[in-house]
Length: 273
Image (cartoon, rainbow, N blue to C red; front, side, top):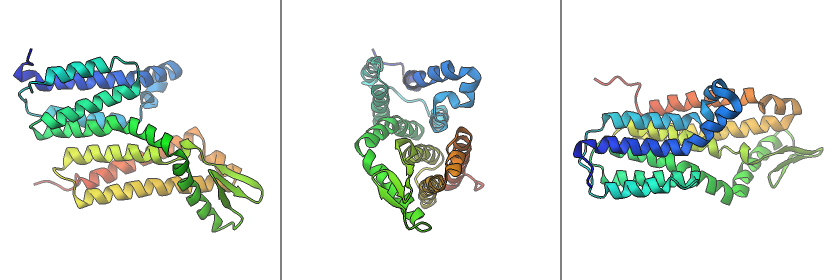
């Protein structure tokens, strides 16, 4: 049975948000169970703010999209996606959503639906790609951070050297850099925000947008190396920088900086006559 011509956008919206709800329900319920409703709200329900922001951009584009005539294979693709998300696996749910985003991008005729599908594709592939890259290249990723931190510290202390993911000195281990210390996760969230804003507010990615991305990614990487370097200098600095308050402050500053630079790159601050 074919989908009614006036309802394709509505059906697409419903499918997207069913898939998103299926994917995000686990961290949301865990956050509410562990922290209570108010604690969960403060911590964005256990889901990074970048994800909610990308979803917001998706909503904006869906609202602006013109009604499309349904594709003859919509019902088949939607049936496959709905069957796939029944499987109790977050990775499979994200991949099903990515598959639907790819189908939507291929079959959409309007700019806003294609933008919706592009943002949705980046959002849905971020988690499984990051997990696999982190698992496959964890040693190499940590080695980069460790090397840069040891090089920075060696400027003021010649005894500092690197051993795998350890920062060593004459008096033993200065710092252990673990998976959670890598800037890779923050880089992926920053890219998601930048991409969502850029695709929503520009017809094509400009040089200014690329410059904004370069500044964002370089800044996050440099700040992470500086933070780790300071943590390795003393136990006081370690406890000062490695606590919930410091992490929250860092996250808020990073979020507003990424938002500002992304909107600047999309030229949203220039009055449009």
